[in-house]
Length: 108
Image (tube, rainbow, N blue to C red; front, side, top):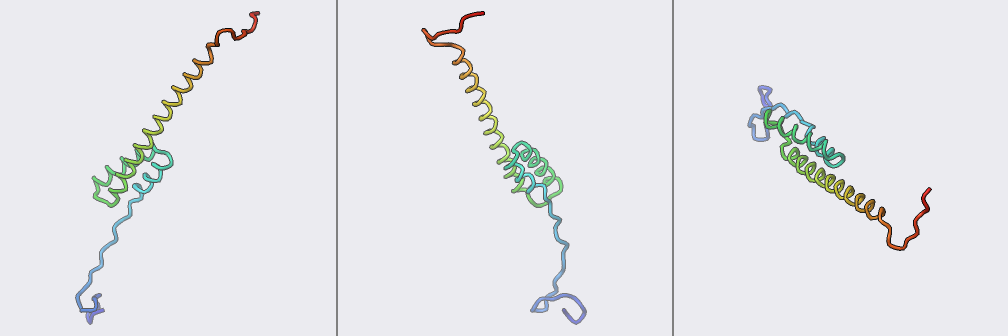
């Protein structure tokens, strides 16, 4: 401390305290949710990115990462769902036709 009570560094230059920036947890939550439940993480990432652009807070890179990861994993989920539906339809269709000469149960 200086003689007048101000905080100074080793050279006597005054140091001024600044208020710490408020932490914005939504981008981190969005990234975690993008890994666990991708569509939710995608939406939260978009909300976080819009809020960061509006308020100028920290976490823009994390919000973008949440959007990208959420979009990629959601696309993979959709691709997997479509593939499974196609496979189930193909399997169901192939079991309805019996090969020639295969004994069939008697009607009635």
